[in-house]
Length: 187
Image (cartoon, rainbow, N blue to C red; front, side):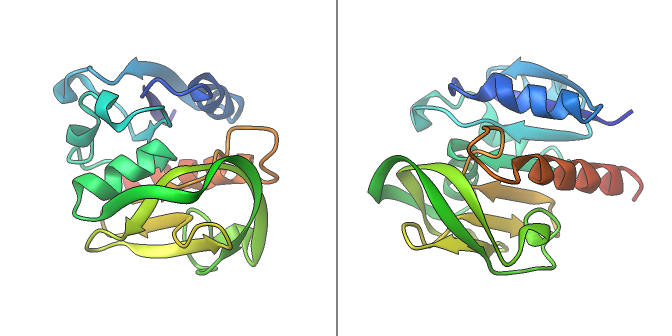
């Protein structure tokens, strides 16, 4: 059975990320973001959202474990910041329903949502510049970079929250990430 851990970055929806994976039949659990990287035993990781990039614990070190990683909101932002991109304050601010345009219908994480989907997202902070090796895979009228992928390293991120009911096809994002983790394990 595929094992995907959810790294708790103190977000209000972290438990819903774990539940979404469990509902897909995935072996999953929440782990504290201070867990030493060498203690992580998983086929994939979800870096949860959270309120503060200063409280991300060991999350940056988990990017070097060689397993697929899905960053959600703050998880995507810390991924971008740690790998050479830039994060800044969003012009739009708080939570809202947003129509997201999928830019790459072949992207393994969000491509199946093409041509667009409606999501629930926070734009207090957002990725302003892509890290080297990443492509922008989704955009919206309120945020230029709504999703990112580095397929070669199996690193993915979404600005929105696929785990909440307000996101129309959020379960599909988790299904796609599960497929990435299963494919990575067979390489």
